[in-house]
Image (cartoon, rainbow, N blue to C red):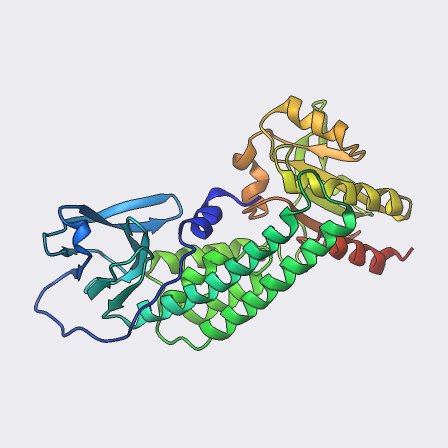
Amino acid sequence: MHKFKYLYLFLAFNMLLTACSDNIQDEVQSGFLLKGKLPVTYKNNVLSIQELTTNGLINIDTALVKPDGSFQFEGNIKEKLFCIVRLNNGDVLMVLDTNSRLELDVAPDSTLQYNLKGSKENDELKELYQMNGQFMQAVQQLESKYAQLGEGVPPVSVQEQIRFEYDSLRRNHVLTMRAYIGNLQHSIVPYFATNFLIPEDDFEFLSQVDQQLYKEFSTSKYAVQLHQKVEDLKRTAVGAMAPDIVLNDPFGKNISLSALRGKVVLVDFWASWCKPCRDENPNVVKLYNKYKSKGFDVLGVSLDDNRSAWIDAINQDKLLWNHGSDLLKWNSSVVKQYSIDGIPFTVLVDKDGKIIGKSLRGKQLETKLFELFGF
């Protein structure tokens, strides 16, 4: 269950963009200029152009739509920004540069169809969103397919099929984005593409983007943020020594990951309020019972903030292994320590304390443990 910043980016902008690549003649003006024409139904409306951030929208400028539907934004910004103009039937997403000269033309129909002229990067952003729109449509079709099963937890075999189909869709989506982004030159758009990725799953790709673009865009806040993210993820990449985890168990007793050295340990980051985590628990219980006699153990690390809910979930799901939490939810020390952006999230640690797998669940986890222990 991913934190709000990722959910926000996926849900707020899953629309189809259309744009063209005509250039506007430069005007003698400092700062950015965005002008355009809307259907006359927008007359006298006040529009806003806002910066899109992981913490919400920040207003940059407002404009009054004239009786003929025309409007104009202008102002000064210090660097390229990802911004939106909110309309009644959707949001227009764009790259706004320090000296942008953009022109927006919106078609007078019920769906958001528009042309945004004046920027190569906005054309590239359009292509990226077309790719993501196709992926989101496929995911929605998958959700509709399995929604027919009704409420409740589906059988394990169905859960595995759902996960297999989703992973296949997502893998193809990431490969398509990699191929497209790899061909972009002198563009900040790849940084926006990283918002569609799960850092723990796509570390290799994020690292590649960082290596290729950081020198060129080192003063951009998007480059700085990704560079720091990659550096943080390196500390818990496969092959690195797992940082020790020291927490209290439900009874206030101190427990640690290092105390389990000599065993293969699945560090399972979860919470009582996380439905995907709870749905996965029966599979972890099955594998724990199967391999515990061969040197396999689990350390449950909860992002709960309610001790009673945490203990009740442990008992209800029959999780008979060590558990720890500081009951600080997303402010937990382990969130930064392991660069956690969402749960369920797992880290598999070998007998020497080295990370040998990440984000393993369901069939993937079962296959990995079979490789290590056999039957």
